[in-house]
Length: 295
Ligand SMILES: C[C@](O)(CO)[C@H](O)COP(=O)(O)OP(=O)(O)OC[C@H]1O[C@@H](n2ccc(N)nc2=O)[C@H](O)[C@@H]1O
Ligand SMILES: Nc1ncnc2c1ncn2[C@@H]1O[C@H](COP(=O)(O)OP(=O)(O)OP(=O)(O)O)[C@@H](O)[C@H]1O
Image 1 (cartoon, rainbow, N blue to C red):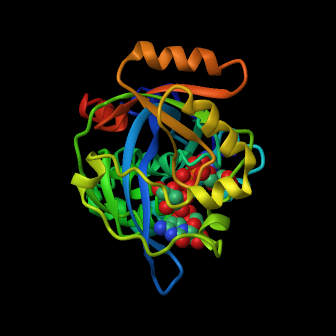
Image 2 (image 1 turned 180 degrees about the horizontal axis):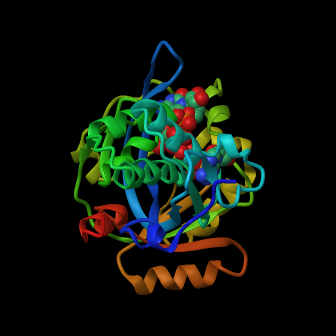
């Protein structure tokens, strides 16, 4: 295998460092139509949160792209980090390689966008490490080929999203504490978008409507009907604050005004649920690290 890392290579800034791939929450999600190719047009608020996977890029001495440890159940060539690295090579003709090590903390099939964020961090960081100099817009365009949730993570701001999630406007909203429950089920995004009963004709709303509390997620009725655990998690979290579904689930979340009240709910729910305590962020920690200037 090509995993021959010299100490000198690891010392070059950025290689061998841990790069964050943060999760997102959809603070609201309305489906307003459908494109001829079947993809749904939506309105959403993507809020980046400080729960992260961590990705390390190791230099290799040939042009191979491979994982340090494949994720159980995900074939290596389907892993979104590998697909992102190969897409960059294909688009630019770059002959360099990389060994990608992912510390996976974000649940899969949770609606937190973990795989998409892993892909985005790979695009953004390898663009630097391989010296490709692609502009942000091109990276977002390449990201969209990998999934509708990838562009927002490349963009790096909490954002109002339209189109299929790729038309983004940065927004600044309170960086509230959040408690997230991951019910014991994996929701298949495609299955939800294919459901006959899914609402597909919601009237578009404005940012003002959202701020006034229009937080509906059009996927919720279909998801809670198919996955009983999601409804149970919503009931459990609703004892502490208004609980919502992120994306197509399975995760549900609630926002809190203080760390203390969030911790209280987190502690009370922990014995019975898989729970995360997190904080909303207006800027992605990936860019906070990049802007510190190590690469
Ligand atoms: C539900 C959200 O997470 C909200 O942020 C996203 O819209 C889903 O983004 P994603 O997981 O990156 O989705 P993709 O991997 O692009 O698509 C998975 C499947 O969901 C469906 N899909 C996805 C996004 C979208 N706007 N319309 C769709 O109909 C497509 O059938 C696709 O086959
Ligand atoms: N690096 C990766 N991390 C997680 N999942 C991956 C990765 N690469 C490929 N996948 C595949 O993508 C699927 C969706 O994973 P992901 O963690 O993005 O779910 P999600 O949070 O529900 O996504 P979304 O909110 O974008 O619908 C997984 O079930 C897995 O098969």
